[in-house]
Image 1: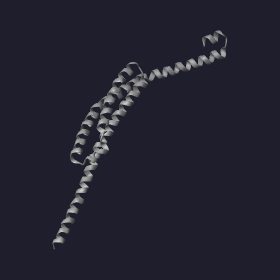
Image 2: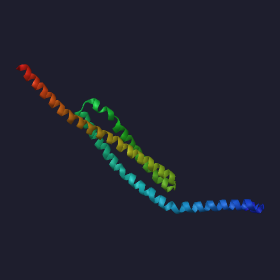
Image 3: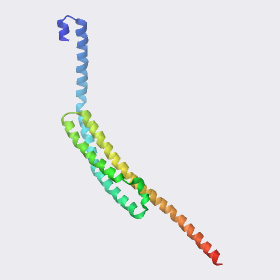
Image 4: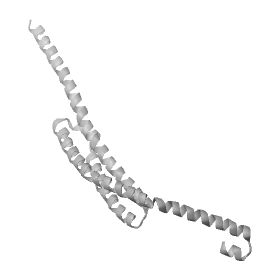
Length: 169
């Protein structure tokens, strides 16, 4: 704008001055929300960090459930969720790695990078819980199927007993 004034190009100087004013106003608006943005990111970081414990507990529970299925049901029953525990552990390792990068992003005031890392960590935790949930749901469905089959087995035994009685008469 200054060089336009020196060149006596008033219209160009006015346009550049208005552009500069808009940029300053935008910068001021963005600066006003920085403390709130930082607070929100720090709050989200604290919440996601707390998920580390619950994700670890979920993996441990999922492992016990997997062992229970493996011990009490046919090998084919575990196939739909085979590998879920391993995948859950991979996501569990990746989530804290992302969380540790958030502090660096916050220190550099890289708000978008911090938000992105928090979202990725959250996604990893969500995946851990989803994979473990699949294992526990598999167990629940197997128990339901076993319980329903028990009635059918009793009915078949009764039919066999009646058939034997008929044959011995």
